[in-house]
Length: 160
Image 1 (cartoon, rainbow, N blue to C red):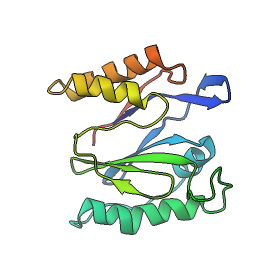
Image 2: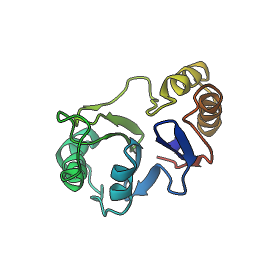
Image 3: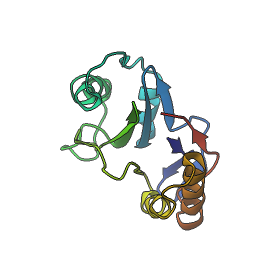
Image 4: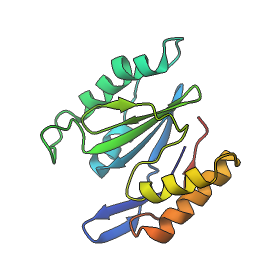
C-alpha cells in the first residue's frame, strides 16, 4: 500500500508530515479525506488482527465499528456518512475499500486507489499489471502527481 502526503483546503494544497497509511498489528490502513479523521485514527489503538477469522468478516464486525466509534462525534459533511473519509484496508494478501457510509468492497482487480488522484492511479495500475508491486505503485503516484494538482510527495510505502 502507498500514499502521498497532500492535504487540501479548498484551493490550498500542502505536503503534510503525517503519512496517510499506517501499520497496525495484522493489517495496513490507508485513509483519504478529512484530516481530522486521519488525526484521530493515527492516534488510536485500533484492534489487533491475530485470528484465523475471515478478513472481510473481521473488518465488518470488528475493525469498522471501532473506527466509526472513534469518529462518531465528528461533524459530517453528509449526514448519511459515518466518516468524512474513505479507507483502504490491506491484510493477508487482500485489499478492501471502505466508503464513508461504511460500505466495504473487495475489488476483484487485486488493486485499488482512493483519493484525489485515484482515477489516474487506477489507469496506471491497470497498465502495469504483472510488474513489480512497489514499482507499479511508484509509477501510479508519479502519474497522479503529473495529472492531479492535489497529489504531492513525499510518498510512503507499507507492505501488506
